Length: 317
Image (cartoon, rainbow, N blue to C red):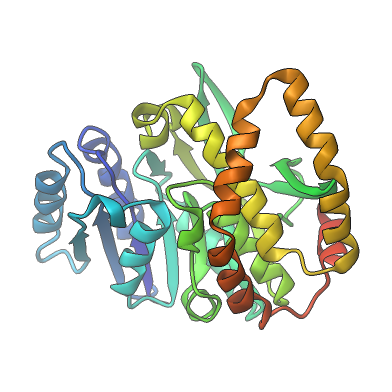
């Protein structure tokens, strides 16, 4: 089984040298197929390009293939677009997505890949040893549920192997199905909800997602691009916008769509009481892109074979 490790980068010049050696150590343990490491680079303003070039040069004569693609246009940037550019270069059977602020344990590959013997498995998620406020928090399994007209998600108990989504920052995906489903939707650019969207589409299309606690990675969120390069208000506005995008694109049951509209006045009133104007801004940003949502909805729904409530009831906990 050949694998393609994709590490999307944006201004990761300081963290790539710390984390790439750990990736290299892990893949050197893999003897069951070819390995390539692909680092698509959004228009970084630091020395990322030189760091990536140096790393790829160091792979010469190791048997590991190194690739990169540089995006120089800011309007073409964003997590989904950057990952998809990397996938376009991939030749492996399995895509392994690792954020630039992630470093895997050396033995993370074997337990991750074994699940792909089941042809219905689309993706497998890792156990994140997440560094947050000076503490290590274990994450990796997600749950999702419908409440008051929206789909909500948060971390689930780690003693189960089903999961509502597989993270685009530390997960493995079957490339054949990735290509079929269309990969990450650039509708959600610049970030957030894109991996939940892809996972949900896979579930509604009849495929499986797995959480593998033995496949461990260290995830230093506080060093990542979102935490260090974007203001919190901007991030929250995008989160609200993408939450609307998710419902409008993926929910196809008439009753749930009715409930979404029914509960909107409640959400508007409670947001007004809290003076949470970002919620309103997110709504209007989403409304302005309704034509794009409709196009994405049309592309996605042709593969759906399961109903929303059937999927959502599985992941309340």
